[in-house]
Image (cartoon, rainbow, N blue to C red; front, top):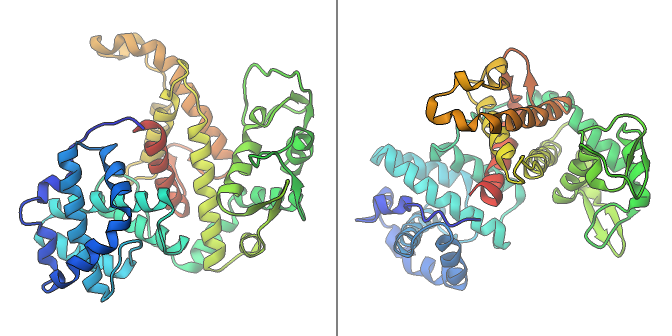
Length: 391
């Protein structure tokens, strides 16, 4: 991650900490909150320093102490390693009563904080609680154009059931059966590639010396492959299952995690929706993080991420415009030198979206649209991509 040394949003509320005014009596929790934060204070400071100047880091930490103090008062318990959705919603309501800019600034602080807890393994709540809190904070931060609608349970179950990505994830898990031998890093053995690919409908033959000229999402039937990287679709799903906790490594095998596997097999219920949501996030992130641009950089990732972000908004882009490669005459004079780059990055971004379309993860018609049930996992995936690559 690069050091942007951006201006900390906390700086806006440094004087008087407006967030403190949201709950009278919160100050009695302040010292206990500081004491509880002491065990990770050095880690938190280092995390913030990667993103902000030293001065803004200190302001951000003070702002965070204030926010956690108020949050603890609302819950009537010290809370420094997890947040509670309903209490946080009340807190944001109070912050918006003070001012929109205050709420957005505080959301930015909290967003970095929960990412810190997740990346360091300090988050003490459940995965479902993290998702709910992160989505609430993202919606309040004013940073993303993605609109995450509220869907009733029956509608959400129906939407998930129609997505090809769910069927593919189930097929790959069924292939794993009671367990498959894997490499020390959890990746598939070369001897298992052809069999695993066949399980999700890909016809390939193994050749250790294979050097494909291009990596298509689904290789043409009979294509020779020599590694998992030569089968992008298989690699994305395998990585997503690992990250979702669907598979557990035991000795030299990857075996299904019973409770999580049962959730994926179910057609309805909170757990079923939750695990499909996490798998979808993993696929989006994997596809974007493994897109390498023409200069061995991440220009294609940036282009595809921007299009997906707009496709999840209330103002989705027109497909013909999004996928049109501009000519030199279409560009402003100062942008003319970028035309050769557009010739490579726009088709690359289109290829990513076409791949996701085949999994039901974006719809390509007159406009580019992300299905409503996939907006939340897409938003989290884009945050992860920004943190790991684009930041």
